[in-house]
Image 1 (cartoon, rainbow, N blue to C red):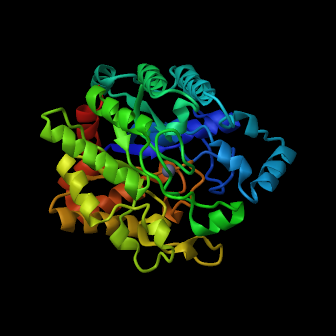
Image 2 (image 1 turned 60 degrees about the vertical axis):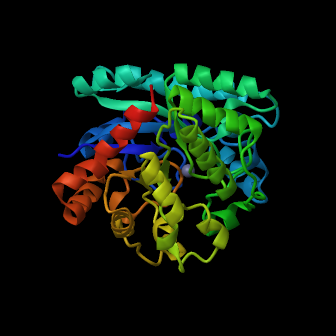
Length: 396
Ligand SMILES: [Zn+2]
């Protein structure tokens, strides 16, 4: 069975927010059920997912202040699930401490599962290579959003916190998420139906801050993967400019990625909202990712693959994972190679999952569809070796 490298999924979010049990087998539940898990250790084993970026997300404080979100948190409290105390504090640097709490809580669960699973959380590239030799299922920490570094700090303090997080094993960071943070603006990333339900309003676009520019330089110099998902077009192009400048001055250039994404040309014209389309990389950006040696991890959420927001009606069955394969085929045609295609499922990120991959234990449906569309050799690249190449070039 070809191993799978999932570059973006959220079991650590479920552990942190809902005390979910990563080592236990879960039945597929509703995509939005807080305590349900789509990614657990038994499922990873059954699905042959050998490599995983466990993406942490301390929910941004802005989540509490969307027009309709307070009723949602009231309902959750009524069901006994109190979560808002785990969110990013409104002010100050304490989100950094909560990030460490999330990382250590997840580590504890993995450690307690050691007797039953051949699994390891690795903290650097050397540990990764050792764990590969032992045939372990390898988990690595990722962060979704620059807010994890804290608020109201100096540029040097943000970088100092990033250094500490790298020591804890963080290997990838998205600069942005749903709200502007100390590093950059947010391009959004909540689909229309969910946005309406929550009362989410996309922030005004803005680019990198001076702290954001320093973080990008630090990641390139010291080896942490920069993930461009959720960043504004302005911020993304500033990152490309920094990379181009580094190249000109003979500095090291490491690949950057979109860890969980579709591509813009594939969603037009179904995706009605022009601003949602801007979340996705356009053709020029795909070619830049190719030039930098990066990858695009395909998200298992069809709104971002084909722009069709009807799929999440209970009355209309969705198209399964075919739109994911269609996007992969498009990228191959554009680039002339599959070397920059990867997988970033976003499972457990409160996303609408295609009906044939409702739990990681069913991910063989994706593997088989990739083999059928691209053949065995290219399927190996898409399923895991492209992501490992990026890891080896962008992490230390
Ligand atoms: Zn995301």
